[in-house]
Image (cartoon, rainbow, N blue to C red; front, side, top):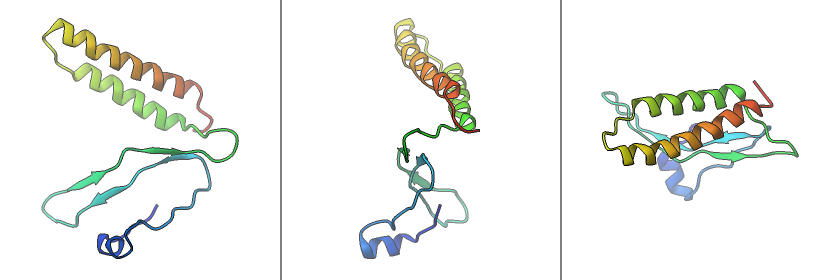
Amino acid sequence: MQSVRLDEVAKTGHLPPVKFTASGWVLVRAVTDVDKTYRFASTAPWYVELGEKPRVSKASAQFFLDWTNERGEKLKLEDPEERREADKYIKAARKFWEQRVADATAE
C-alpha cells in the first residue's frame, strides 16, 4: 500500500495512517535495502472489515489452503504421537481454509 523509511517512522514513533476502501487483509513488512541479501520482518496479518459483509478473496483463501496442504505433506515426523498431534492442527487449518474458499465473496 505504501513505502515508508524507518528513519521517518522513528521520528514520529508510529506508522502513517492507512485508508481502506474494502474489507481485506493487511500486514506490516520491513525490508532492508541490502543488495546482497533479501532481509525482512513481518507482522502477522490483520483482517479489516468494512460494512456488513466481509470480503473474502477466493484466490487468497485457495492460496492458503494450498500452502497448508503443501506444508502438511512436507512435514516429516517419525514419532506416531507427534504425527497425530501435528495432523490435528493441519486438519483444523485445512478445514478453516476450505470453508473460506467455499464462502468467498470475491475472486
